Image 1 (cartoon, one colour):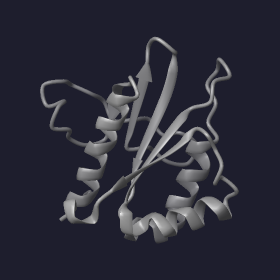
Image 2: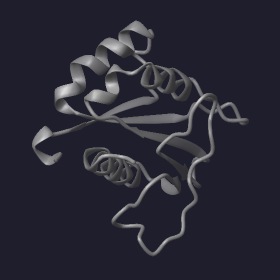
Image 3: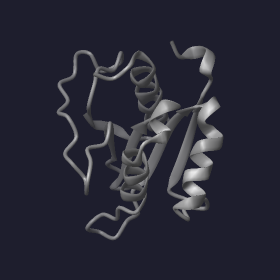
Image 4: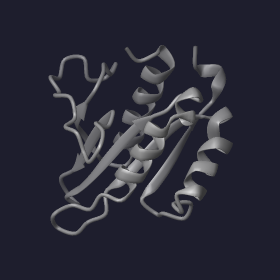
Length: 136
């Protein structure tokens, strides 16, 4: 069961996707703005299932969102997810946008992971920094 912090970060990723003109098509959890909308859980992509998926019907692009608490950043599962989701390409050869939501206190650790995976300069990765004081 996801923690309250994970749920909050997921909801902030939804808001970021809205700002980037993505419609949420899959979501693993409850979103305060999607309560009356039935949305299926995301499918597994490579080794894991992301928290949410968005689709931009105009650009035909896909966006994956993954919420991480500070403790999540210590797991090998997180490294696998970052590696997998950041490298996805659609059938039409478009790079998939990838949003990683993380508390500000975890930014240093996330940057270390990205550097180790040689993903520090990927233009398709957006880091959404959440102030720790907003997380329970």
